[in-house]
Amino acid sequence: MPAASRTGFSRRSLLRGLGVSLALPALPSLASPARAAASAGVPTRMAFLYIPNGVNVDRWMPTGSGTDFSFGPSLEALTSFRSDLQFIRGLAQQNGFAGPDGAGDHARAVATILTGARPRKTAGADIKAGVSVDQVAASAIGKATRFPSLELSCDASRKSGNCDSGYSCAYSFNMSWRSENQPATAETNPRLVFERLFGAGSGDERAASLAARQQEQKSILDFVLGEANGLSHKLGSNDRRKLDEYLTGVREIEQRVLAFKPDSVAGVPDLSLPDRPPTAYADHIRLMADMMVLAFQTDATRIATFMLAHDGSNRSFPEVGVGDGHHNLSHHQGKEENLEKIARIDRFYGEQFAYVLSRMRDIREENGRSLLDNSMVLYTSGLSDGNRHNHNDLPVIMAGTAGGRLSTGRNLVLGEDQPMSNLYLTMLDLMGAPQQEFGDSTGRLDAVLA
Image 1 (cartoon, helix red, strand yellow):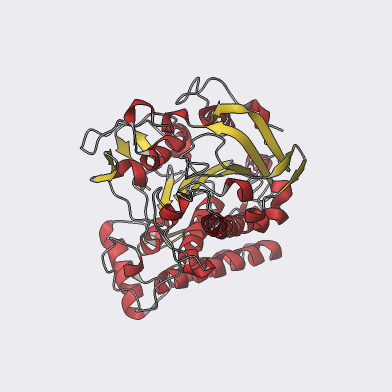
Image 2: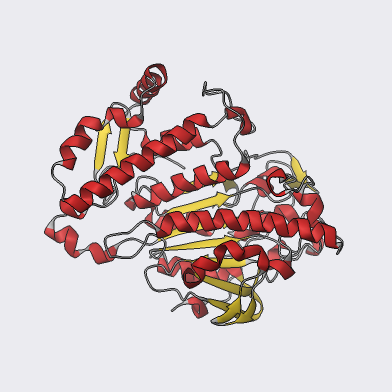
């Protein structure tokens, strides 16, 4: 998540203090006539959420087609978002399959999911994949926002070592790639994400602000309180309520960040945070998701990737009664007991996705639509059936309509093995970053459009 040095990058107002810059959501009371007239031009946001190791296909995939479909039992948490979702069946990443490269499907699952490119099989420094769709968009439109893109994960990133049958760990742990040999490292520590979103000024100023907040137990809001109070007097009643709700939300996130125990994030040094019980996985996911939504709401960025876990992850899920490792279970061998446990994990991840969607649906924007409706959020995995290491008929859900331009409330069933890169060409069009080709594309997937 690179910081930008440019100025004049945001449509949003800023509250500033020592080492602090707090971007605000759009407030119509502050809009000039020209800005108010342009409110219909609310930007489109694009996010990619990744789950590892495939799914229990029979329990995850919807039944039926078109608008006449039913949710799979693993995704019951999403039923209230029926009108906001479009399932897409038949998409594939053919470069994920073994071919002459042999084993290494988990590394290829991540390396191909957003690039459509075949990764070079190496555990050395000569890694090579392709530029990912999020970074293509960031290169085209990223100058409009403070951060061109936001990369998040709940697993500490690795860029070296052998992680999967001769494939570098760089492939398994990074879904976003700035160039064919440079992954965009995801941030896993909520504290560092929070400080990047709200830090400002020189390094010395940011350090002084952080030191003061830690020593005096101050909130980031304390540094902008005077300016916030002055601004409040200029707002109408609706915007005053909106500002108060926003600041309350920022403070609530800050408190959760402070409570996050650093050793619950592998590989992150001690940041002298309060000594609390380790944070549950769901809490980690939701805290990172809340900051992603906050970045979208304040137009700090319009592009984000969020890897909930790397492919090949062997995390257990005691919160849903699964003590086995996820990767081990994904090689289920058709055993009903293993498939049932995978379905529980799928349900857990579906509940986290529902949380993200609920946060986005609750935020109203200048054009009267919700943040979710003004976005396109792709939820997927690089494998369908983990036991067979299938890279076709991937589990794919598109949420949001990109401002009314994407169809929702249906299960779109395509012909077999449509390149996922075709979908990305259409998404790039909707982001205002059109390309003639991408990855292994064969054309645009206009079937997803409204």
